[in-house]
Amino acid sequence: MATMAPPHVDDERALRPNVPTANNRLPGVADYQQVDREIIGTLRPTLGWFAAVGVAILFLLIGASAWIYQIHEGLGAAGYHPPVMWGVYIVTFVFWVGIGHAGTLISAILYLFRAGFRTTIYRCSEAMTVFAVMTAGLFPILHLGRPWKFFWLIPYPNWRLIWPNPKSPLVWDVFAILTYLTVSATFFYVGLVPDIAVLRDQETNPIRKQVYAALALGWRNSDNEWRHFTRAYLFLAAFATPLVLSVHSVVSFDFAMALVPGWHATIFPPYFVAGAIFSGIGMVFTIIIPLRKLFKLEHYVTINDLDAAAKLCLFTSMVVGLAYMTEFQVAWMSGNRVEQEYFWNRVFGQWAWAAWIMLICNMVLPLSLFSQKLRRNTTWLFILSIFINIGMWFERFVIVIPSLSHEFEPWQWGS
Image 1 (cartoon, rainbow, N blue to C red):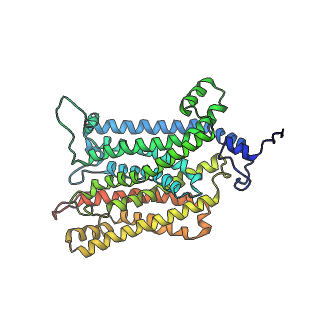
Image 2 (cartoon, rainbow, N blue to C red):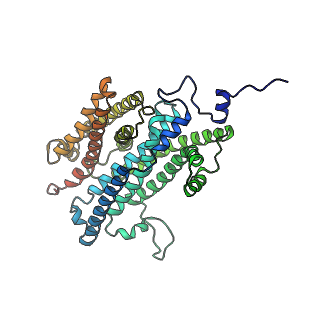
Image 3 (cartoon, helix red, strand yellow):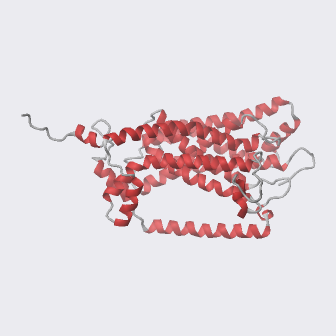
């Protein structure tokens, strides 16, 4: 009778199929026990964490106070006056929706193409998506004159015997946000299940252990579970990719379906999607680079991965720049004097300062990523990501405010 061979790597991989082998171990990482120990250690709250939560609560109270004041005084307190009746709330809504849509799109597309550097940034981008979409959902409510009746936007049987206006962009946004939030949260949660199971197995507090056990859905880390997990994750990635493209196209229809100069353009759906990916990568850098330093995750978030993500950032910046130039070319060749005057006013008129901030932050500064030295410099990547976030907010500002500030009549000017 043959004796049983001692356990080796293949046996370990049978129990945990994603265990690193000798060929793909990370420098400085010996085994999965070290990974679990270092990653779980980041969940312990520190004094700095409590301080950050305190600052966040302070800003929440300031914002709530400003909102209450606006409800009492009216939307004029937010700078809304004819002809500009879509102000910074809609600008900020589109900004956060773009960031939210980018997170799942980046994760899903990189998973479908089996991009190696995805493992570094995908969890950050997916978490960013969920919170960004929830943040975006606040701004249409702030934009309403009677925000306590926001649920009227939802089609449900009611005593009023009326339904929401399907031609209203606000109704489109409600369906877009709810659909995307549901799919993104599911995609994020399914990917978390194996990690939650690790927390469950190592947790000593009985209450937290029960919470983790419920969220882990009975995960036992078997080969059969991993096989079903990878198939489900592949399906969600394939489902989320076209969904994100279509949902963000719906957001662009808020503008493209209108006759306002600068809005009525068929380029808006791909233009908005490219801008969303670009702003999402910028926000990922803004989040992950400080966390990498704060939690000492240099073994996991490597320079090579950041370099690859920076190349993707450079590519999307060039696509966004092409969209900017295409807008101007179409207006110039259209023969439409209203469109031509709008784009001239955007760059050389009243709103030139905002347009040039947008162009410099989104087109000029990202060209620095052609330099490998700067792509591998985390300080510059973080600084550049801040400029990208600023530039993308001003992109939405330039789309919304200048178009409304000077409409069809020569005397219709606003600020």
